[in-house]
Amino acid sequence: MRIGVIGSGRIGGNAARLFAQSGHELLLSFSRDQDKLARQAAEIGARAGTPREAAEFGEVVMLSVPWTLVDEALDQAGPLEGESVVHTTEQFGPGGGRAVGGRTAAQVNAARMPGAAMRRRSTPSPPGSRRRPPAVPAPTASSCSCAATTRRPSASSPA
Image (cartoon, one colour):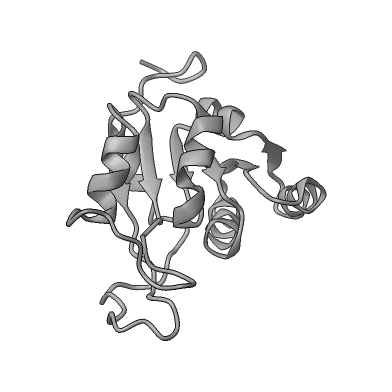
């Protein structure tokens, strides 16, 4: 499966490494340090590119950026209508929670990505948070595979 990863930090980078170990093709994007992104991609046998390239490349797109950078990452990715998107973003992080108007992070992100088939991957709560970590196993290389059910066919895949 081709997976475009937008955000190659601790969560996105580790998930990408696990996906690569399971034989998936990857394109990593959205890093403050493009040289580091290129090295990280090369280490796992992936390609490095832009968020738009990741969105176009992936049968599934994984969005894994800090909450305060979601809009910037999505602006760079372009429209995700018809894409299967797994997101690990949440409004909690350094500095505490961000106001989302009584909505969940998934609801806010769904509004940010109209027409995308959204999937949420739970992540542990940050240190010092009053929230309990979810009762789910740690991310694995197969945790994203179920999200490709609504992806539009690519030129290289059967319809």
